[in-house]
Length: 379
Image (cartoon, rainbow, N blue to C red; front, side):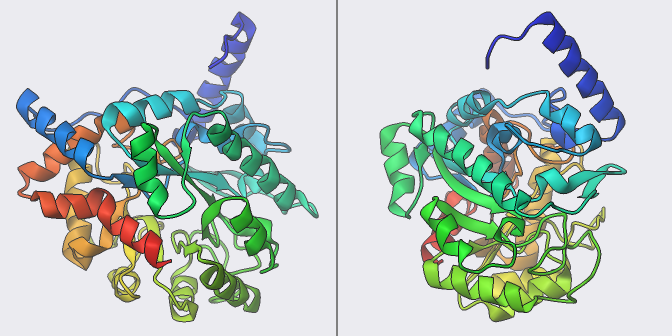
């Protein structure tokens, strides 16, 4: 990161305090979350050796928060968060330290329209005409620059995951959280694909032209006509559809409309020790899994859990619900709510935790990368 002046530091510190007061955990880098279990030097060495010999992939992340760079007309306290800057080099360093092979580098299509609502986010204002598309173009250019600079290896096809490992660089595949930039125009899917985007989450925190969000207002009561056209276009061009953040009705409609398997990249299920509006029903989780071998990303949000051991337990709970063949990593890194897995450098500890609960190498290989790799190829 660039050197900052004393005034910039004071401004950023003030921004941090203001954002914290708003409950903006996703915008801060607080002290590391506790591990919650003991891991010996031998166990960690074995975990690192395992990671060195297997592909590991994070299905949903915002490494370094590239989506914030250059954001315009940002609402309220979210603007203060943008003053803290981006830190892609730090997160990529952590990827290397932890042995992560590749991650999604996600744009946030509705970012400029959002504001804090309690501890969460929601739509604060409507987009101006063309604003969502202009924001997408800015974000994608910034994400593409990470590969052009040599910081990461661009993932465009299945073989690129292994190519990234051979090159000694973390792989980056581009995704967009929220289909707002499409503005209901299915023909823009082809442009996004040409830009290197390989997955779109049709809605984020804002109900848009495609369907309803799980945490916002209900307008379409499912998938709109434009949404169905976008699903078809994504299927035809070979882009992965992500139903995370979609309302229950919209998610089921996407699954029904899609000719290919889908992903719910960062979710958990209702009915455990904690609940949250962003959790999904077991019926929806099973529908994702049963759609041609779909996959769900285990999400380490600090909702009812406080340490990495809680994430291990939550991952096992998701596996119990849908089966080992249908779960992957979906950390929401650098954009998560009270994350209990908050640095890729902690990935060996996560592997140790799973092994301590009896998970064998074959299942570990599926969870940390194999399942997502299979889904990516199928899409």
